[in-house]
Image 1 (cartoon, rainbow, N blue to C red):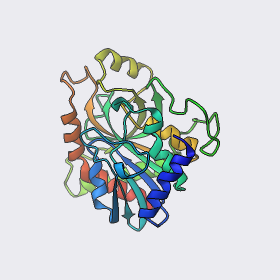
Image 2: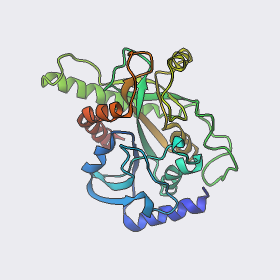
Image 3: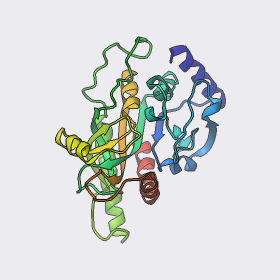
Image 4: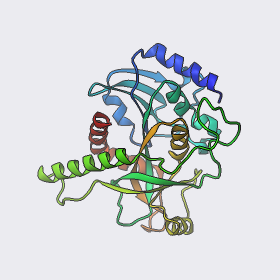
Length: 284
């Protein structure tokens, strides 16, 4: 997608929401409820935004919701586009291109992911400290437009360390508060840190693949986020990544994996997830 097309999409969004937008947020499978709580919200279906693709997966509403969280203006993708849906990488990362042209400098990327560690159980939130791109393609392949960013962008620190530290502390505080209120029987962390491995999908992984991903250092596996993170860093944006662990990887639990389980787990952690996002947005 060209810079001019991103400009066209950005101008359309500005015509619907005139204020400066501070943060962009992408909500993963089963996590879309957060967008329903925005104040003074404007909802724009993707089909109305020039050059935006369409969400085709259950749990992805397919609209851009722009509003405020505690006075902070946020653009929320309630549903994303996936490579496995048949879209080209240019389409997958086009919303991030548009956010960059809008002048947004901070991005929160969320997803549903499978755990590769039996100690990291469904319902846990995992902060991305790094990623492995095993999707088979780099989203920046092809001609580079310097208006987006440099030909060879550095990926030493994709996920901002200061954002990570702040989010981790907020997660610890929520855990402590829930324990003191008797909502949790044990004082257990709702948030851990790990490395996210991105695959093209749409099949879930085989047990042999899960063993391989564990061996090379991954802690969770999913089918999104990395293209958006790369595009955001290419444009100089600061990124925070959070995975909602919805299941154990193939072969770790002895049970089959299905999308309904992903949606169910997302619903169970919805209130904790929303509270965490509200606190993070107020701090970054």
